Image (tube, rainbow, N blue to C red):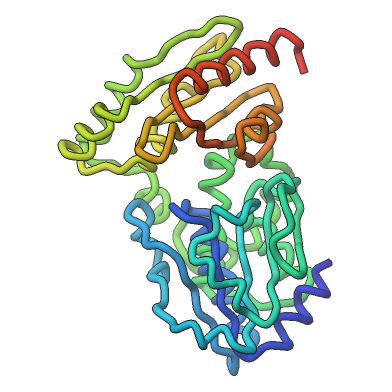
Length: 317
């Protein structure tokens, strides 16, 4: 699996790296990290990263996407990272490439690339890329290690989630052999403006306990518009950014954050005990066993998702 991927990377002089839209630390970390790995070990290759820009993770060195023309894809290899579904890929021009390769740690959803390296046992795509580099004998530079470590931290919830295991800690230890300070990363990741701290406090008051160990929050389109105007946040910042306020409530094993937008209701599903991925898939989404997402048409459909999670809890699977 890794050998085939490495052979493709060796084969092409031009490589263009994609990842999912609204990138998190893992998407950006794997993208920057893989670029730096390729440039360090194959310095004659030209490597680009593409996709939408980020606000939340703009502190990450090297995250600024390249602007390239369509012709760049001619005789190039496109690599898609941290993405299980085509509609989530930022910049669909990957289809113009001569060949395509994917690295992903989500549960398989659909065929995307010519060659897939998919392993959902990894806590992060950054962990998968790190293992790939080690098994292939690739050398890390400081930025590669720092970026990959950042992605591992964000997708493992600071190594709290049960996806983190002995392999996770070993790979993190390998990365920290490079001279960077993890505390600098943590300060950037977890320090917030007072307004955001206050916003999370407000969101704790919006929590609804649905019974049977399930909680949820609903943000209507009008509420979202007001928050965008007053707080300068976006839909992604509310949807992904506020789901964690329900994570540590006693008696709550699964929770969902619903955010109504013009495109539909964004649904962020999380669980401590149960595999909620099939529910996300039922509603056109996907992700991990205990952290998935979907977009549904309206609030009534979102409430049906809550009922499905309650049924899952009653079944105890």
